[in-house]
Amino acid sequence: MSAQSESQRTAIIIGGGPAGLTTALELLERTDIKPIVYEGSDNVGGIARTFVHNGNRIDIGGHRFFSKSDRVMNWWSRIGVSK
Image 1 (cartoon, one colour):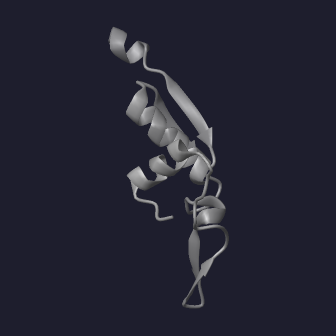
Image 2 (spheres, helix red, strand yellow; image 1 turned 180 degrees about the vertical axis):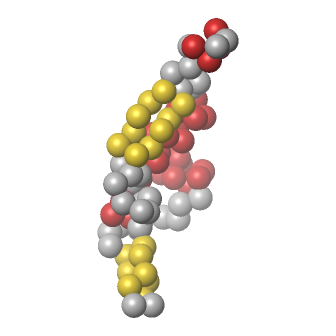
């Protein structure tokens, strides 16, 4: 095992909703930490996801992201989430 692989750090993230996925993306972009996301269901998105039931698309939670923080809103805009 190389010295580089021995020093690899890993973050375990519980939940594939907006917070968990945001955390994983930030770790990938800003650090050398490898994120591993564990999601209890078959889909990611948490309560901000859309699912299909009997051929109908259903939103089970918020699909608009709003914050009074320009930094937060700019982050969501950067990754392509509509306001």
